[in-house]
Image (cartoon, rainbow, N blue to C red):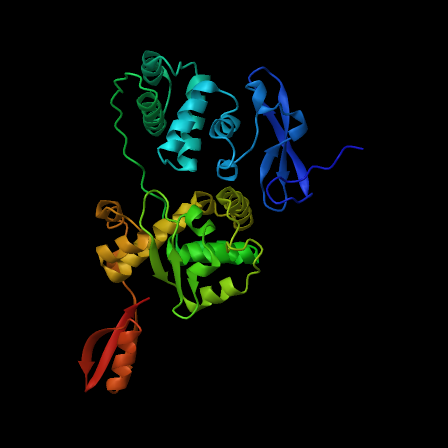
Length: 370
């Protein structure tokens, strides 16, 4: 009888086959998928060790989990034995670049090489960029990644001009975002609710610890900001605090699964299910990062304070925050209203974030954006 596979991510034996990985020499490697955490991995019995320097070595190992290993061995595991990419990735790691950034650049460099580009010959890369049928976004990405490679490996390259203007992000309604929360499992629904209330990136939410939650002040502190952003503390609704406190502490000290790839895989499956059930193709345009875009736009619409939104987003440059100004619809502002009959009522409303609007017949009216 064949030995059951165990998920290297969570240790579950609920593992099913998930297609094959096709290698450069024409051979295949069996792929598996965990039904518990949606982690995908290769069959370990069909892999060669890293020490044989084979390009067939497709070992699914995370840099973060192997930082205690010898550095060269760690990166060689990730780069599957390619010496040029090993050296490049290790130099990038020593310069303090994030793991996700390095992995993205490595995947693009492998794609360039697969299309016939010689990474050690900058002229061949320029020719490839000029002749390949690429979109402007792809060409810009290839140019950026190879420019990093050439600079790191001290290769002289005059990159071509690539004019690229990013597309406007898709902006869903709040109802469409909350539909994901209602359809998700209890732990993942809490994850999405935190993303909706804090505007945090996926990796930032995955790294949230129980000590980052202040139940008395109803705040969450993001202390592991990504992309060179600032750490910040954000006030969230009491209902979200209650959702967090109702979770078990399976991943202690972390609140959620610290692997962001698991969250992305769960969200992709959930998105496909919602789009199919509701027959609404708009769901397929929503990504986890869409929650962050919606948060920034909504906060800007409510407060009209660019510097405050800059702090909430963790941006070091206000230019990054200004991108959301044209996405906020200030003409459709809706408000809650309240009245203050005495000084105590007015003080309480002011402390809760209400703004004085006007006075009618001796009664002061306050309002607050919905």
